[in-house]
Image 1: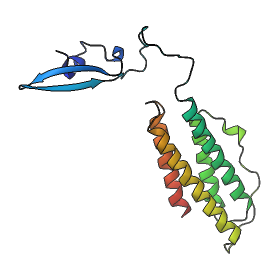
Image 2: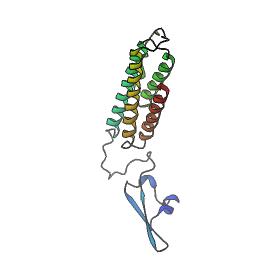
Image 3: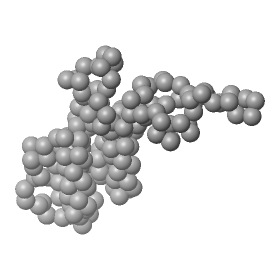
Length: 176
């Protein structure tokens, strides 16, 4: 009988088991069913698995995440053009989005930070309030998109997307 004990003891190569391989073990008169999935991504796929290695399975998900991060960078650039007393915070959050872009494989140099710093205004203007509202909406949308896409992404990309979703959510709090 195959079970988790055989797998843990190394008698079965966990990296060689395909998704959906099942182990059945008798326990006290009952049956327990355990599903095994590929846990070692460094093992090559068995030759009988029909997978096109030249196509990134996360390509569309990664492209969508890159699009969201580029949109956030553009939103921060626009917000930084208006005079604001929170320019330091906006520059810090923008820098974090450049890091997100790099983590996803994008080129942050393609989206340089705006140069110069507009004079800070002590009184909130209606356009500044609209700018912060737009930033919060963009952060909320990106957080939802990253979280949604993490559910269908590979085990390599899902944790990054979940982390980005959490970061965008924390940016919402910082902008409040």
